[in-house]
Image (cartoon, rainbow, N blue to C red):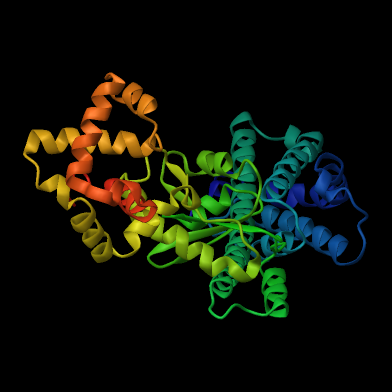
Amino acid sequence: MDRPWAHVPGWVGPALAPDLLAAADSIIAAVRAQVPEYARPLEGRFGERITRGVTVALRQFVALLGSEADLPDTRVYHDLGLVEHREGRTLAALQAAYQVGSRSVWQAITRGETARRLEPDDVFALAEALFGFIEQLSAASVVGWAHAEATVAGSLRARRQELVELLLRTPPPTTAELDRAAAAAGWTLPTSIVPVVVDDAVEIAGRLPGAVGARIEPLGVVLHGDRDDLADVVRRAVRGRRAVLGPAVAPGDVARSVARARAAWPLHVAGTLGDRPVVRADDHLVTLLLAADAGLTTDLCDRALAPLRALPAGAGSRAEETLRAWLDAHGDVTATAASLHVHPQTVRYRLAGLRDVFGDALDDPIRRLELTLALRACEGGGR
């Protein structure tokens, strides 16, 4: 450990002690005046802790001057950091208090008779000793504060993990169970929840005020209250990564919504749902329906598009293009011709050929629906 106080003449400590200990009240007053979080009456445990901390620090400092000793036990400063976190003061406020305190101590030193007896090199050594000493005390308090923060954050994360798992439970939890879990997790339970399936839910939830997130293997789930611009908010939070939003549901239906978003995830990763990083599962219900049973979809393609596969390659490709455009235009020949950039009479000629191979299927609503779904599910007439 660094011992900058070892370079100060040994007589300085005893000489400084009376003036520094007498300055304790002014040092505390400076901290209270310059750091808003400490601007409160010196009463009760707060006043006792601050007074004791400053007095002990001053006594330790003057005792170390001129010695090769290590800094004494810093647990009192570590514990101070713990208490400051518990009482809601920020790390910035704690560090500011140490900075103001160190400046006030140095001002007390330079105003005293002892400083005027020091050689310039000894003044520099004393300054280095003081600020090195305060730096080590501050570091101990920062460690204590950070330990308390990590403990709280870890506990909160665990409670939020439990809350998300509870919301995904089947059958759903009771209202009383949800209220207790939400209160423990520090989350106000929305009346309408939108699940967001992402890779790193905890990180993304941290960028979404009012959200909770948890790792629910194999993916993460973020829960957020419904709002009109949620997709845009999530898009900014994921920063180019993929996310799938489930439908907005009541708390008791979160599991169903998450299941839908999870079903869309592999399709989104494969690029099937478009190239936007954030998508809504409910914007792709037909795609999800077709992907739900791959064997059934393959059978649909094989049966519905068999007439096209029986045609020569060029004719089959042209016939599929015409059939797709005609179905998209709901049987409007003029709109189909505009889509294909051909004359309507050409469309009528091609439709006559399609009727030859499909028979009555083009006039049957169910068969037309099957053809529409098959063309959507099958690329180029094949899986």
